[in-house]
Image (cartoon, rainbow, N blue to C red; front, side, top):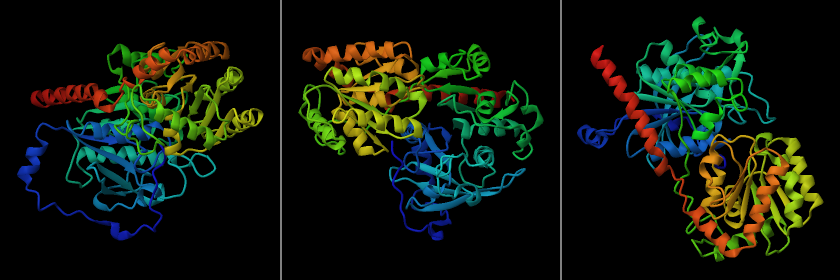
Length: 516
């Protein structure tokens, strides 16, 4: 969940060295090992191992690894400064030429210790700068983001076309969210038959750019229609992915239905409804990786298992001490979240007094919008020893908070999938969440957590009151904890629909080749 620590040593050019064929491994053996596997390229703007701003990074890191047994999955990511300083060798394996105002770039290869292969798009003038993938240190969007992420999409098309000079070409490209939205588009404009999948992780982030940038990015005139990229007088990189990919997915079945409505469609509901009617839009829920194991998680103060709550109590005691909360036998509520309006933090502020009056405590961990951060600091100041907010993020403390808390608060106004509720359930913290998106799909109301319907304090308070009532019934609390821990939303359970989708698209491609 955190941005991976990077090697602070200066980047050395000798990390970039020409790729040498692995002479010690016979080609025949490689073919045998890869038999039946399909070559798939993931295109993403972040990856937890190297750089992260949100859940996209977690999915981009975990899903390729989960699919490794079935397919040869590799990842393409921009060569941000943090990526180039990761401390692992990066070998130059290819290059891509410029197009329109998009500069030429090199392709590096980085092999992770567990075998995941990552292609790095090396273009210093676009990516090697201090800041985050999309914004500078002041939180302002990089003004050249259209160029930066168009270059990413075009590089994916180059690799798919076999023109990137690397000794590997994908049979299918899977692009993720608006930064990779132009990958299926460039593939289409080049006439490639390689199928593509585009996944919407959050429809609210659309990558809308000025129409005047069309020529700079090499976007043809036919793309500037409402049936393609045009979106209220602008061009949308997200809509490009939706328009040109062979199939569109999103990260839960409920969210796939929600985004076809005016409440959740962010202006694209008509376009997405058309895709749904054509059978081209589906929802495939995310998962969590195998490290979320409460019995032997090295981050925890003490491990624990089903019906064995001593370790959970030890983590709760640590959380109270670390956050400056008073010793208590009452319920401990937690928030582990980006602090943005989408996450409903204002609603949590609205029910906080009820939690305290019922003998509960609240620990908050996260960062985000400055105004929300200050509101939470003020809430903490008004309730010393009972409510505490730590602005920032730390992986270890997040895991201890999941493990030590009795309830996790997730009153999201919308939530495409959500991972925190899955982490919490695995660590016997019962989520209290709005019935939306992936929260509705992953929480069994009254069994593994508590759901409420309306994004209002009144509706939320009723769910919190239900949680408090369960806390006062130890046998019921124990039963719900055990059921929550057994939900097991692991990636190994989530990959089957992806595998099915990939093979379906590849079979169609093979039939088309045979009849061409």
